Image (cartoon, rainbow, N blue to C red; front, top):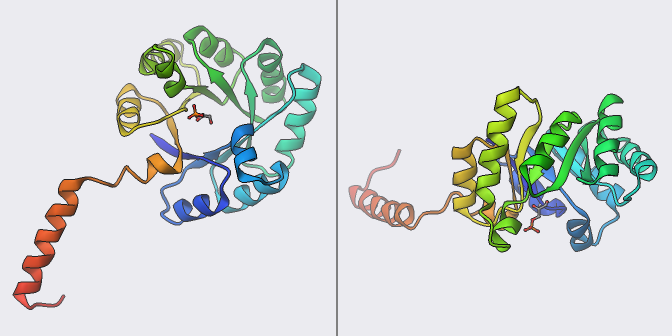
Length: 216
Ligand code: G3P
């Protein structure tokens, strides 16, 4: 499973990129607002840092403007992935942009039929929002499992990009369910390495090592 960072904070992206473990970045209008940056400038900076796909979201809701905004975003860098909402205009724009050779990420996916539709439109990624489904009382992970089964039944190339991830259990369950990508906020990705027994075990090893008086 690939790890994308769900942020438009360039400092966070730079820090995680240095680990060599970052496979891409996703942004959305709320994250652009949080960054306080101009969308084109910040996406350019992110694309220069990260080799993998970087999602930038259109703001338009009608087909024609979605196309022009999508093409403008794609003009920023070759690793831009045009993010579009799953609406009728969005799905139609996805098909057109994919036919033109662009990568697309179909966002705000809350049902398996939506995921089926965007796969038929040739989307590069579909983004099911796990946490927001959980918030509404529906098990978000079931959606990942359903979409995995549907895509495998028909050999769709669309990648499942699990989004709205809030916990380590989400990350683990996505990997078990076979999501292709999990996009993680910095607050979640930093928890991946942590376990109290690792810290306690390391402290004990270091204390014993000190007592040996050795050096390597
Ligand atoms: O990029 C979209 C997504 O990950 C949003 O997450 O926590 O706002 O539901 P959240």
